[in-house]
Image 1 (cartoon, rainbow, N blue to C red):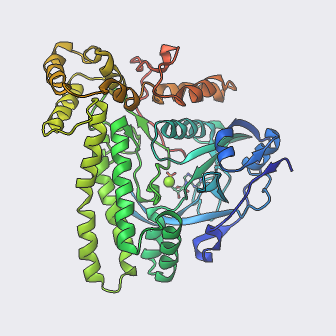
Image 2: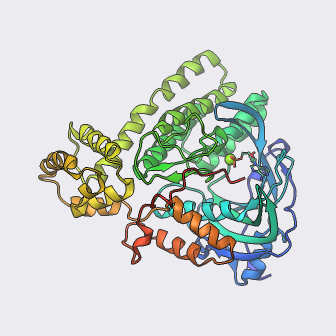
Image 3: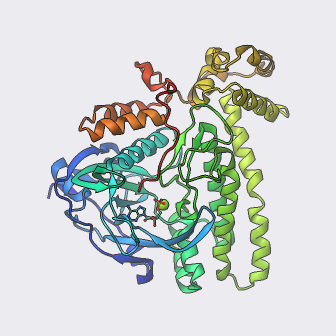
Length: 471
Ligand code: AMP
Ligand code: MG
């Protein structure tokens, strides 16, 4: 075989109740649409023949050493409890340990039905695969912890959503696919033996320094707080922060109805199914606290003195806002080019965000224009910007390297929704050029691309008002 994957599988050693072993479904004519050679190298994967690799990452050929299984989990979706979810259109092939020493899952997404598919067909359309590939690789290039994309394979089959669409399989790579919902699944069933096994696995794999549930909770919470602050600093809206979409290792996971904001508004929502605005941009930190609290609750059955544990865990979770706020302000200080900390910084940041809301500023372009002195052009009434600019000017006295800091903090290129949609439409018609171009441009988000199309906000006709789940 011209393909070799140095599997080293650990999840499959957990007890039976954690998953169902099975193979992927057959696809008619797999062809490689995108292959992430850098990531493959990092993971120690050798694939000389992409036609052969398409058979593997389309699901037709199970590679040597793989141990395919669908993971079970549960979760709160939009606040409502689902006692059983799971990999309904995904299959874990196994894990590798990369040249950097990192263990990573290799998962096929869109690989056919499993016992957890409920009414779904277990398949994915080309659109969601393209969107996840571009989004996750863009987030990686921006320095945000995230799952990644190793491959996109066209299946040669059609999937039926509202209409017939070309089918595809995404190979997702993650530190692991263990979610808050995985803990919730066993906690809700009162299976403390399994819960303990999961705890031991997670601590050994992701948080070796944690000495038990309380320390794990603290560490998971810290990563969530940092992650959400990072999202906020980029104008990223996840869109479906259900507990089954909160990954324990702290990576962004599940790129469904997500988006980077164009015009800034703190209550912006994209997801077509988020009618109450639960997962609006400005709600993300509060939802993260809620999700961390569900994680805390799922750990309680492991504690001998449950009353005392509830008290201790409550206090831990109450520490979220302080950690988040510190991260958030550090990120926005850097966006303004500030290295020193001063008391009025919060006010300076908040006043800018208020001006941006009022002035309908493009979030990315306004920050990117700060070092050029042209930020005022991004506000509908530029004169309103000038008083703030003077305050900031005064604040910058004595700051060294502000411009360089801003230039490495404020991206110029983000995966704008209207461009992703255009890339999807073209790819569905058989032309992948825009997808590949966009992927390449998104790889260097702090550099000015030659073509202004990549940085231009959508025209009114181009605006995509809502994004959808990947299903
Ligand atoms: P998600 O919206 O991706 O977080 O998925 C929520 C749940 O629905 C998970 O349990 C998925 O496995 C399941 N699911 C989503 N799409 C499909 C599909 N096309 N076929 C089967 N199950 C699906
Ligand atoms: Mg999910």
